[in-house]
Image (cartoon, rainbow, N blue to C red; front, side, top):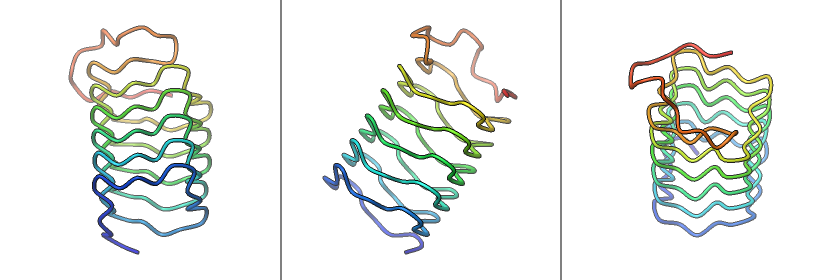
Length: 127
């Protein structure tokens, strides 16, 4: 399902486990409590999406766009999000344990501890 278009789709609690969604467009979609585990979503677009409570564990999200996405209470354990755009994303209560955020853009993101990032807008390296 490479490059599939789910813009503005309403897909809460959908199970995409083990799917191949490279370059998929989920901008402004509602994926609250969805299961997106063990999938390849390289360069997917989730800008403005509702990902509250969504589980991404063990997924490949290199270059993914999560600009202004809501990831409140999302599970993002053991994933590769290098070069991801998380500018303005809400990561309140998100679990990012053991994830790779090398060169990710976290400008203005609300971090798991509720602090608004003060790191500036340049790409950073986080482990």
